[in-house]
Image (cartoon, rainbow, N blue to C red; front, side, top):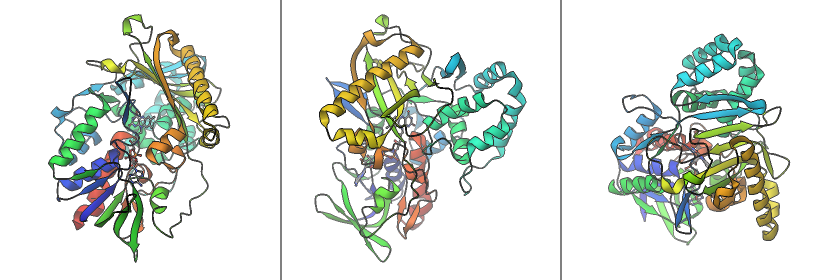
Length: 462
Ligand SMILES: Cc1cc2nc3c(=O)[nH]c(=O)nc-3n(C[C@H](O)[C@H](O)[C@H](O)COP(=O)(O)OP(=O)(O)OC[C@H]3O[C@@H](n4cnc5c(N)ncnc54)[C@H](O)[C@@H]3O)c2cc1C
C-alpha cells in the first residue's frame, strides 16, 4: 500500500492535519495506536456513563463575524461549518490566590480589565502598557527563548499580579518550569483573557465523531489500533512505516504528531540531543456528583485557577503531587444547556512523573496513592469551593503514568518537551512534526498546528 501522506497520531493535531490534507488530495491515511480517536482529549465509559479525559474548556473563543480570529480561521481551513458546532461560552472564571485575592474574567475582556484596575489600582497604567506591547508583538516570528517572568516583573510593579496572571497561562499552556516563553505568553494571554473559553454543547465524543465523519467524507482513511513501530528512512527521506502488526505502508510524505523524541525513537539509529529539562506531569481527578439540587457546588464559576502558597510554584514537585496550586473545572457551568452527564468537578495539580512511575511497579501501592491523591485533592478544593464530598457518586484519578500508557507521551507530559520545533522540521526532507512539540498547545492550538504544518510543508508538494 502506498499513500501520498501518512499522519501518525489521531489526536486533535493529527485529525486536523489529515482533514486539511484530505481537502486537497485523496487517499490520506491517519493511523492511531489507540482504539479511539482524541489522544489526550478523548473519553472512556464507566457504568455506561461517558467521561471526558482532557477537556476543561477550549480557549480562543470568537464570535462568528470575527474572520481573523484563530478559531474561525481554523474552522475555515478545515471547512467545518460553524453552524454544525454549537458552542457554549464559559459563565465566568476566577483566579484565586492566598489570602482570598481574586480576579474574575470572562469572554468579555472588560471584566478582567475592570477587576485589575479595581483590585490593583496602582497598576492600571502599567497594565495598559502591557496590552499595548502585546498588540504590537508578533509571537510567530522566530526568536530564542525570552523569559516572561523577567518581562512581567519589569512591566508590572505588583509581584502578586504577575503571579496571578501567570497561573492560568502556565497551567493551560507552558511546558517550561517556573517561566514561559514570551511568545507563548502572548499567545496564551490572547487565547484565555482576551478571547476566552468555551466548549462544544455535546461531549468530546460528539466533537471527535464529527471530525471523523468530516474526514471520511473528504475521502480520508483512518486506521485505529494501528501503532507505528518504525519509520523507514533512506538517505534522509522517509519512504514508509512499519506497523506494530508487521505490515509496511509506503508514503510520499509523513506528518508525525506524537512528539519530537517519540518520533525519533521510531527511526533506526536516531538519537536526540535534548537539554536535560524536566517535562511537566499532572494528576487529574474527576468527581462525579449527584443532581445539582442536592449539591452545593458553585454554579457561577466555570474554571478556578488557584494558588495557596506564598509564591506560585510551577514545577515538577519533589513529592508525588503539589496540592498547593491547581485548576478546578465545572464542566456543567457553561452558558446554554448543560450536559446532564457532566455533573462533575475536575481537579488538576502538578505531579512528579518519576515518583508515580516508581510507584506503579507495585500496583497496590500505586492504587492506594491514587486514593490518597483523590482525597487530598477534595480536601484542598473544599477549602476553596465549599464542601461537596458527600455528593460524590463516582471518582477517578489519572496520573502521568496513565497519560503515558494511553498516549505514549514520554514522561506522561501533556505539554511535551520544553523545547519546541516551531517550523516542524526535524531534519528529514519529507517528515514534519505537528502538535504539542511543534509549539501550539491546547485544543485550538494543536489543531492549528496540524493545519499550518500541512499548509507550509505538504500542500505545495501534494
Ligand atoms: C487532563 C488534561 C486536561 C486538558 N485540558 C485541556 C483543556 O481544557 N483545554 C485545552 O485546550 N486542552 C486541554 N488539554 C490539552 C489538549 O488535550 C492537548 O494539548 C491536545 O489534545 C494535544 O493534541 P495532539 O494531537 O498534539 O497530541 P495527542 O493528543 O497526544 O495525540 C497524539 C496521538 O498519537 C498517538 N500515538 C502515539 N504514538 C503512536 C504511534 N507509535 N503510532 C500511532 N499513534 C501513536 C497517541 O495515541 C495519541 O492519540 C488537556 C489535556 C489533558 C491530558
